Amino acid sequence: MNRLFHVPLSPFCRKVRLCLAEKKIEVELVEERYWERDPDFLRRNPAGKVPVLRMNGMTMAESMAICEYVEEKYPEPPLFPATPEGRYETRRLVSWFDDKFHNEVTSKLLYERVNKKITGQGYPESSNVKAGAKAVKFHLDYMAWLLDQRRWLAGDQMTLADFAAASHLSALDYISDVDWNRSETVKDWYAKIKSRPAFRSILADQVPGFPQPAHYADLDF
Image (cartoon, rainbow, N blue to C red; front, top):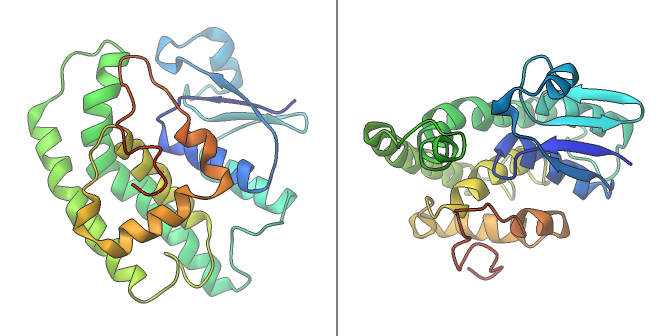
């Protein structure tokens, strides 16, 4: 059995989960308290980070490297476009969300509100929360601009870029930190994404001490 060592609200883990689920690859989810730096886990990934995927006799780390491996090994259905230009745009946007969005928004909202409590690092820093709440508006506007020109974020087909964005936004949505009324275009895009069968396990996540908001698993918001 394939095994994914993960944290439920980690957007990087969620991206890998969506990639596997879209390709109908069964995987056992194993929650990993990576912050405790268990020696067994550090042997799996000396970097001490999730996700870590065990598949085909390999132990793999780093979410983008995992997704690229899965795409090459199991090309159907494709999560990258056929053209070099399309693949470039997909990778650019995955990097946008996993780097820029993560640093400006996810780390300021999700990590402050949830991760600090779970890992025993104290209380949220209000200045970080305010900065994240301001930055997310810019990113939603950028997504709306992209989607005004395209069916999906990277072009006319759904790609890993959509899963990367949805992974971050779904984690924030779990703590009600996304204003879906800011853009009907983005809201409609997210409704399409979270209605996919691949999203079911994401919508079923439950984090002790942080109950789901009523709208989180509602496909019609």
